[in-house]
Length: 364
View (cartoon, rainbow, N blue to C red):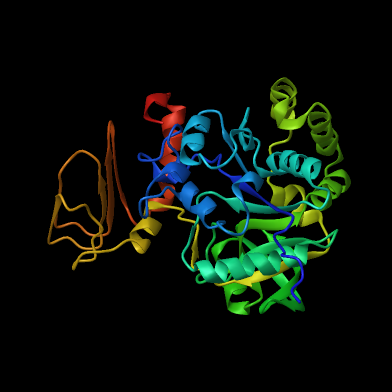
């Protein structure tokens, strides 16, 4: 006889407040990466929620975003109760957000299990993803445990956090579960190469599972001041008390859940995942994931590439002709044009920082 579903008490918390600066000029403050249709007809946010179909119902999904795009997020996700699409009054990174979410879920369900999902990732192996989520939820259902879904590294990437695996702790639903020895944030290239060569490390893609009660206990132990502030918000009614939420939330420390909690916690487990994951971190990644013509260009139908190879071209209004150029990223939108190389595509965020310094808010 089958036991209860590992999703019986599961609540998804979708993180959709980022700005996606490396996708400028297509990604703007009022239309960030998670709201872009980069692959297929749905936005990355819609795809994230869609992957939960049949596992976690819309009534148990929370989406945390910002005030600038709250209405657009509501339009994207009409199936989710509007009260569960939360506009944060300030950007405070992931730890404060997840603390607020934990109180909301615990209020509804003392056994509530939080499934933390970034809104801007691509996952193409859906069946494998569901198996991993099932094993992770079953593991995290025990009080005190935290689980990270780790991705097998395919290259020495310096832009990701890493998780060092300890001994194998269990096998759940065909998935190996390992203890976690250490979290490391964005190592230099030489260190990343050692990590990948060792076979003991996974990428940290920001997908976590734990009971809401476990997370709040960890806040009280590792971040007592923030825990008291979170308790104040919860005591006033949580996200329903906009006045208290808007007053206290901006006072919370701006810190990631990795630094605030995970690096200071014990009893952490990892589920290695081969799920066709990509964080879609730059235009170069969009190039890698997109269909190409005979000369390995990614380009719209209304364009011309002559003696040109390996280019990524995105144009909303203009006909683009590329002649004798190679490995470029060319992005044309209303009022802005980006030209860089695929190799330097990660640095587009730096250009956005320069625009901010120069007071060019209209372009952002």
